[in-house]
Length: 337
Image (cartoon, rainbow, N blue to C red; front, side, top):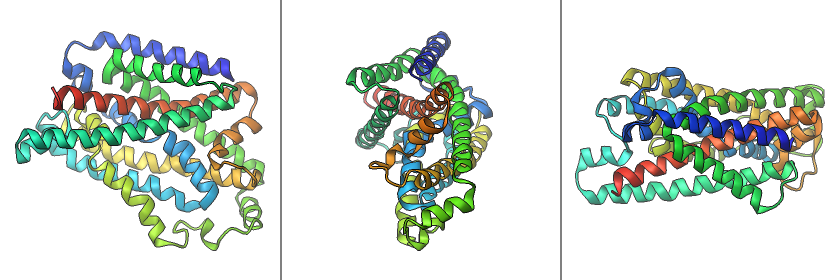
């Protein structure tokens, strides 16, 4: 499995170095020359969200709380759809960052620095979560030392710094494809191991879970709001989201990419939730529910196939990490200097 991950990382690094040849200006580096078509714009938006939080995090939350976990993805998906319409007009104004709009609307340097600073704080927190998720994946292939984590983090940084948003977009296309296929395959295999959905329900119900475990509401409307609203609200202001929409070739592409990516995120995350539910039936005594997805992979797949699926999980994490890095770079270059 470790060999597969190493080969994968080398390929991703190669794509980043190759993409660096296309950077001739700041617009090329930060916004891929504002030339992203619908396919690439949609895939990079999906990749921005389908990271450690939506792969490992959702399966973990589903393991503990059931179908209500899907609301986190629904919140992000609906947010992307709304942002598609909001950014439609902003794309026409040729902005680079969200603070660009705030300055355009309200004026003044203070609002630019303040909004960019707050955004950077949020981005650092999200990036930290991806690093922790990377540690969990590396642990499954026997890499326990901090050196492996440092090397993986360096990979994020190197291909992003060399290639800019061009590199991020191209690697996102590869990574989200692998991650989505990996999630679907892992969910189908795990579900089959339980004997089917009804058998899964029976096995988990026998563990004494609450009545709302297999309902989308979770039996608690406040929990639904707690999961959905923060993701939706962040999406409406997130620099990592708007940067991809500003990189679209025109306003129409911006709107369409937002709508399609929102729908895709919700669809893919149904499978990551299923992974968590199946893991609850198969491994009811996990000490750490964040191991749900990786446990399914390690137990039920051939080592080579498991390596590919773990590469898919790492792909999802890397996709979010590189998005955060380019978003932070945009703030530093455009809003502070």
